[in-house]
Length: 350
Image (cartoon, rainbow, N blue to C red; front, side, top):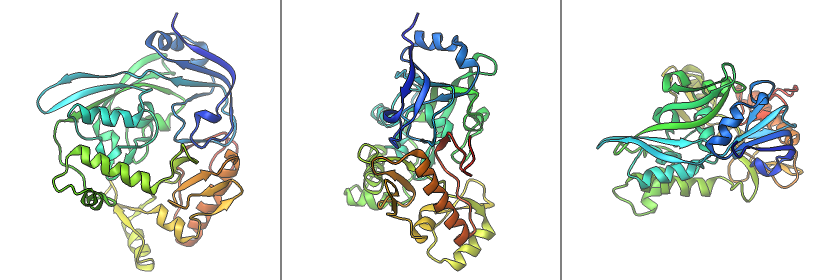
C-alpha cells in the first residue's frame, strides 16, 4: 500500500489562491508513486465528478466542487536524456512551476525563462498552456503523462495530441477525463531570447544588462511580474482573470481607428489579432474598483482580488459586470482564464 491520503469534508480555503471558502466532500492526495498507483485503482477516480487540484492558482470556487478532489503531490525532476544541443526533462505534476523554471536554468537549459514566476504547479501548465511575455509552454512540451479516466489507463500524449491553443488544450476541453501525472519538456541549451514583449528590454536596461542570458530574462520577468501583479500570498487572487480576446484583423483595425491607444498584438493565427483586455477593462473604469471584499486590483486591471472575506460567488458576479461593460463599450466578449467551479460564467449552475 502507498501513502494515499484520504479526507472527508476537507476545507479548501488554503488550497486556492483566491482564498475563498469551499469544501471537498472527499479529498485524495498522492505523495509518491505507490500512492499514485493506489489512487488509480480507487473506484471514485474512475466514476463521478472529479477535480484535480494543484496550488489552486487558476480556479475560482463559486461553489463546492462535486465529487472527488485529487492532489498529485509528487515532486521529482530529472533529465532523461541530453546532448550538446538539448535535453529532455521530466517533472512530476506536483513540482512548483517557478521552481522548475529555475531548475532548468541552473542546469544550463533555456526556453522557460519568459514563464518565470507564473503561479501553480507543473501539472497545471499543459492544461492551461500557460504563457507570458511572448512564450507559451506548449512549444516546449514533448509528452504529457496522464491518467485517462475513460480507459482506466496511464497514457502518454505527444505535443500534437495535446492540441495546444491559446490558454487551451485537450486537457482543459476534456477536464473530467484527464489527470496529469508528469510532463516532459524538450529544452535547448541555447535559443534566441524573446525580448520584444511588454517591457523586457527596458527592464534589462534598468538592470544594466547589455548582453542578456536566459537567466537575466527570467530575472527581468520576475521583476516585472512582482511590480505589476499583486502577490497571492498578500491578497487573494488567481492572476489574470480574463484572456486577451482574439478578433478578426479587420475588427481590430476598426477598434484601433476608434480607440487609438488600444494595444493590439499578433496572434498565432495570422487572420486574428489579440486585444488588451486590461486596457479595455481599465478604460471602463474598473481598475481599483471594490464591492465589499471583492475587487479589481489597483495594480493591474486584469486581476480580480479578494480583500479578505469575499466569496467565490461575489467575485464571479463582479467578473460578470466587468465583462458586460466591456462588451457594451467595445463589442468584445471577454472569457475567464481561470476554471470556474460550482457555476458557469454566464451565471447558471455548473
